Length: 533
Ligand SMILES: *[C@@H]1O[C@H](CO)[C@@H](O)[C@H](O)[C@H]1NC(C)=O
Image (cartoon, rainbow, N blue to C red; front, side, top):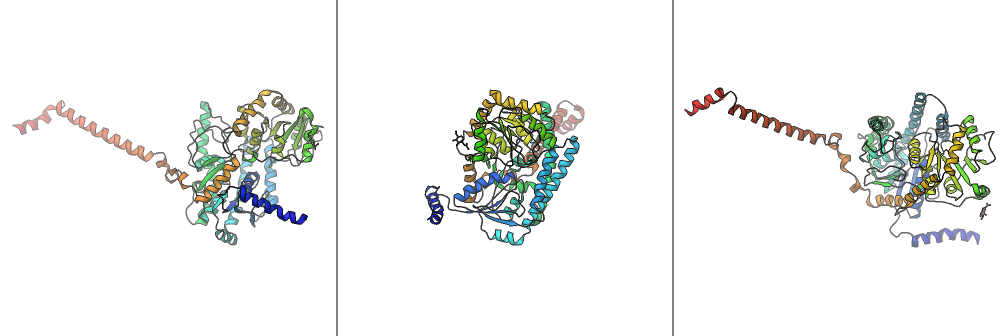
C-alpha cells in the first residue's frame, strides 16, 4: 500500500500540474551554465520552476563545484578540471581571512588583487576545460537546446551559447567595473549614476562627481584586465575575433537581481529585467530546532547574524570583541559561525553552522539582522522588514550598506575599526529607535508592491527567449556602432566642417565684396574702367 502511494503521488502531482499549470508551456530544452557559490542559490529556484513547467534542463559544471550538485529537477553534466573542490573552498576561506587582516591599505589591495588574479586563473582554466572537452561539447551540440541560461560574471556560458548558436539569458547580481550596464549599452551619465565601489550617493557633490568621473575612466582597464583572457579563449574556440564587449553584449535578456528600492533610479534598457528580491520569495516554516530558539527568546526576540557563505570564520580577537557586544543585549542572537567558539560567548548567543536566514528574518520575533551587506542578505532584510547592522567586507557590499544607511534602515560599521561598544550601541539603536523599523517597513512595502513576483518574471523571460529564439527586437543598435559613431563624433565633425567651410566661404565673399566696394579702389576699378571704356 505504502509503496503504491509513493508511485501514485508524483503521478497525481504531475496530473495536477498539467491541469492547473499554464497551458502554453510545451516543454523545451534549456542549457544552464551557472556560476558556483551563492550566485547558484537564486538561479536554482528559477530552474526548479522551469522544470515544474515541463522543461528539460541540463546543468553543466566542473566536478569540483562547491555548491552545484546533482539535483532532482535537472540533468547534471560535469566535466573534469585540474583542481579540487578543496582548492575552491580554500580560496573562499583565505578571502574571508584577508578581509580581517589589519594591514596598510595598499598592502591589502595588492593582496586582494593577487587573490582575484589567482581565482580568475582557476575559473578561466575551468572554462577552458569545458570548451576543450570534445565529448561533452559534442553532446551539447547534439542536445538541440533552445537557449542558454548563464551568469555572465563568468562569461563561459556566453562562449558556449555562441559556439552552439543559441540565444543566452543572463542571470546576475551585477558585474564588476560597471560592465553590466556597459554590456547592455545602457547610458550611465557619471553626473548622477554612482559607479560601483565609489560609495557615492546619486546626489553627488562636486568632489564626488570628480571621483565618479575618474572611476568611469579607470573602469574599462580593470574590466579588460579581468575579462580579456576570456575574450582570447573565445576567439580561439569560436575562430574569430571576440572582444569583452562581444561576450557581454551577446545576452538577449538580462535578469538583473536589483530593484529601485535598494538601488538609485537610473536609465535602463528594454532587455534588462529587474528581479531584485527573487531569493526572498520562497519562505518555509522553521525547523523544530530553530522554532525552539525563537520561542525561547520570549518578548525580546532574536537577532540573526551571518557574514555570508564566504566568511564563516574570523580571527579570534575579533570574534571575542563581537561576542562581548552580543552579550550586552537582551535579545537571543543566532550566529552562523563555524570557527571555534569564542571563550567569552554569552548565554544569549547561540552558534550554528548554518541558519535558515530568510525564514528566521521572516519570523515576527526577528528584531535585527547583522549582515555583511551582500545583495542576497540585503534583499532578505528589506522584504522581511528587519533593520540591519551592516559590516561590509568587500566588493559591492560597501555600496549596498551605504544605500541602506542613507535610507535610515540600518547602521554601517567598519569591521576592522569597530569596538565591542560600537557594535552593542548600533544593535541597541536599530532595535530601540523606532525610526529604523519604520524606514525598513516603508522600503519593504515599496519593494513588495509589484505586479508580478520576480521569480515569475524570471521564468517568463527565460521562456520568452526560448519561444522566440532570442529577443533581437529588444537589442539596441548601439551594439553595432563604433565608439565615435556612438558619440556622434563623426557627425559632429562633419557638421563642424560644414559650418567652418561655410563660414570660410562667407568670409571670403565678404572680403572680396568689401575690397570691390571700398578697398584698393584704384587697382580693382582700373581694369573695370578700362574694360568699360
Ligand atoms: C513555539 O510556539 C508556538 C506558539 O506558541 C507553538 O505552536 C510551537 O509548537 C512552539 N514550537 C516549539 C518547537 O516549541
